Image (cartoon, rainbow, N blue to C red; front, top):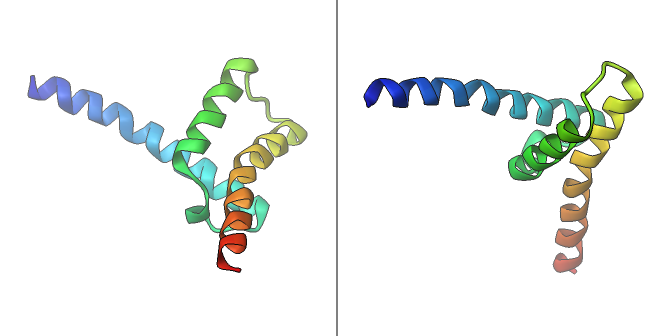
Length: 85
């Protein structure tokens, strides 16, 4: 049982790190900090994106993915600004 848990956990870490790397790339493109992005939102966008099409290396398609992920961070920033007034 312990071996199965180790194997499953070992499989989750690369996926977690790939989502975090996607968040870093998105934040860099959007001029935001990675911590301003939601892990859950990024994961949901990535899952939907990968189901609809295979991610190509074309820069325009990657830019659309980054915009979709960063959109949630921008909305949250606007909400915070409105609540601070």
